[in-house]
Amino acid sequence: MGLKDSIQQVLSRLAGGSPASDPVPDVLDDREIDESCQALEAKLGYTFRDGFFLRNALLHRSHVHVTGQDRERSNERLEFLGDAVLGLVVNEDLYQKFPDRSEGDLTKMKALLVCGARLSEVAGEFKLGVHIRMSRSEAATGGRQRSSILADTTEALIGAVYLDGGLDAARGVIQRLVLSGSEQVLAKRSLRNYKSRLQELIQARHKSPPRYRVLEVDGPDHDRLFKVSVTFSGKPLGQGEGRNKKTAEQNAAREALEALERDPELLDRNRGTLE
Image 1 (tube, helix red, strand yellow):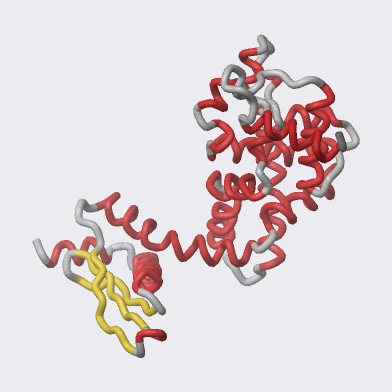
Image 2 (cartoon, rainbow, N blue to C red):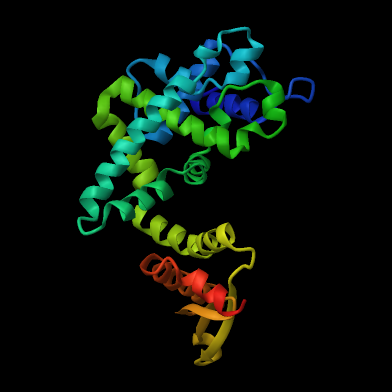
């Protein structure tokens, strides 16, 4: 059996390909662990000099618990370190890439790139879950697909690379995994967040949610342009345009948020006119 076939068998076992009586093994032998780590190194584009760091990064606390080890043996300490390294590298990248953005803008952009949802997506792209060593019960309840575990393990991996190869090595992995295509990620996530941010802002101060209304639809069916307004208590907060209704609503919400940043009392005045 070739190395590739052997690795595939190990990954299959980790993913739950074993018989039902032993769906996910708690313990792999050293050879199987090495094969799983080799496959992951290929995905990361980084080869560890000291394999201990990679093994530790993949050790979920549930595995440590069922094998009777101290919790400090899990990947949680590496997660703590990786979070700091990730923040530094992302901050540096944003600072250099967007010289005209304010501190507030950079802070928001960083939050979008390092949030748990984004790191979970990154982990899913290179199938990290199959490599994590966890208890049978954790895996049986969806642990290998759980966003929090995937995000935490991604941070632990970054911490492991930093300890093994230094900041430049960690920067390279972060660039490949997290920052690749970051401008597109930021554009997509920022657009998606305008409506939720506006709703959270309004509902934190008032019970009534914002309302969206289509004002105009221009153009042929294959090239329509929507114009949408967003209001609160019947008073306009913003307008937006887009090639579909959803995009127009998001752009209207963005304009409303900008208006509220300029005039924080706008909501209270609008509310007062109807009371």
